[in-house]
Image 1: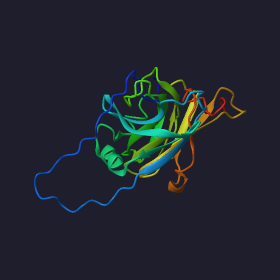
Image 2: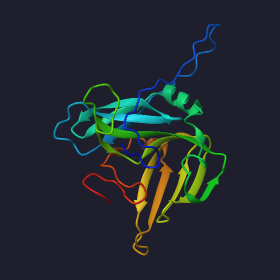
Image 3: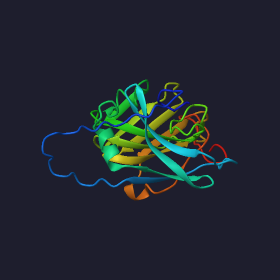
Image 4: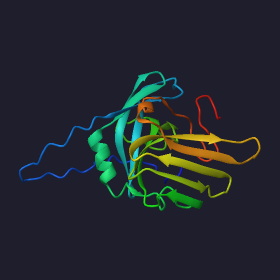
Length: 229
């Protein structure tokens, strides 16, 4: 399984986000955190049996499945990310790490403002759960997306250049959790050079459909249903 800008793993293990049990008298009940419902569209397989959408997060060296979505029709699905789970992810130092040494690692001409920003990302893929264990493998993966659901410790903006020097990425992240959209442009004036943007969308736009596609190069391809950009 190949994920852009993140390690490739052959098996994604389900891991729990630990919740400590207190033996003392409990404090005030925390406010209810409503779930975030996300909508997905993908090229419909001829056979939709056991097709699922998985949300995954990297916790140090481990990969956790933090949500499973189910089809609502041929080539469509919904997935809910629960508020308590997102809160636990954001508080986990294995996930929430400095942007400079995480997402920007290995890039050149890096600028991050402010440089103290930290992020924790949730990624998505469509897979056929052949053994019905809820754990996608490389062999089961059908589609993915470069869009992500991201936590930022504070609002920030950034810019960097890809390792091969062909792509320049810029982006802005809102503080807290937000849906981040991936867009690639290839200006006609600069052949073989690409402009990548990764920006948080307004909360009102999180209901917009996330389009899944066959794996494409993160820095040079805008994956769309039916083909490349």
